[in-house]
Image 1 (cartoon, each protein chain N blue to C red):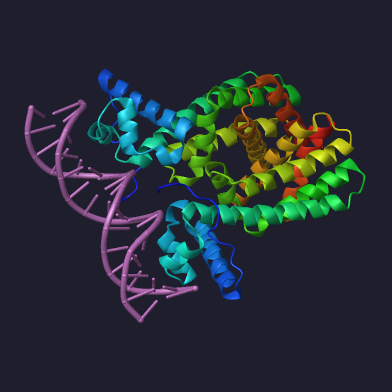
Image 2: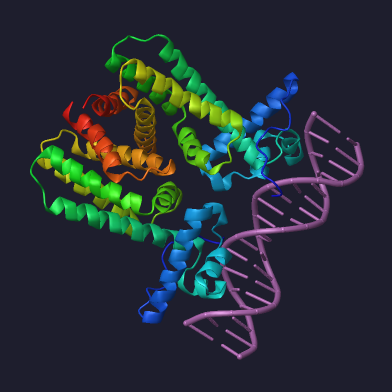
Length: 197
Length: 197
DNA sequence: GTCTATAAGCAGATAGAC
DNA sequence: GTCTATCTGCTTATAGAC
């Protein structure tokens, strides 16, 4: 690997190209889910996507870029979801926290294995500016929300709550738990306990 | 890789051999800490340990076995620490939970980068019986403790608390946090909140 | 027991035909 | 734009000398 490149080679504008990119990303996602990172080779992804390696490299300059884009999309979806939740506050700390966590749990439980794999993968990738921004956005949204509610050290609290949620949800996913409501309420208990004690 | 083998080739009984094994494991740990999993090749480990690859393979049948042993030792130390804490209960739920978490935080903050790397690595390794047992032990200790205090669904609660702690401590370590007491008290707040709400 | 040298295999990446 | 074929480099693992 000469140099690690994270940006996609080009932002496809043709409809056909978009479909190809989507197929490649979806293939990568499925391999991650079923066989883990070690099985995710560029050849395996191309095979699964029904294209050749050559085509893959047409759209992604390397394996890292492929993974980065996957994370970007996933994280983007989560951030949008959380942002939407933040947009309609109940002005009651506990209810709002519950709503946030519900959104996060719903997101992570949609494709638990994928979400987990990407959570573990993320810290190992050299994040480009856009992905870092997405993460900062998430922390900022939560932090701003906490500050509005008069929580002390809102930034640290935001980091802690995100970490706590990630930890619990990833672990639950690993044991095959699918009870969205139950998990959500347990995480909320911990989060509210953190905030109100 | 022909077949994944997890057991060490032999349990060294000679003093010299023990030293070699320790050197190899420590070298692997340091590489994990400083450069991550990708940099952990058998050659790199042997180099850093001051032995040749040949010697490495004398003691470990493969890279996987090396990592498995590293996890075994780390996990063993943590479990012993937690077990020791469990042995002297204060018979007050909150104080006992705080003691558990303090022990866990102390353990994870000793070598944060290593602890994190192994936490992430563990789910990707085919665990042998001994390691699985260690993890079960940890959950069992916490679960038995919770049951004694009349907590409902103690097994689920144990899993949740372990996950919550792991998530928060790993994240804190990643941001370079070293304030043991502060972190410990924040995690305890979340844990007690989970239990008492 | 430990070393050096090397075999074997594979992943990432590219060139060039169509 | 996409494919096939191929190259290069690296990693795991072993053989055989000392």
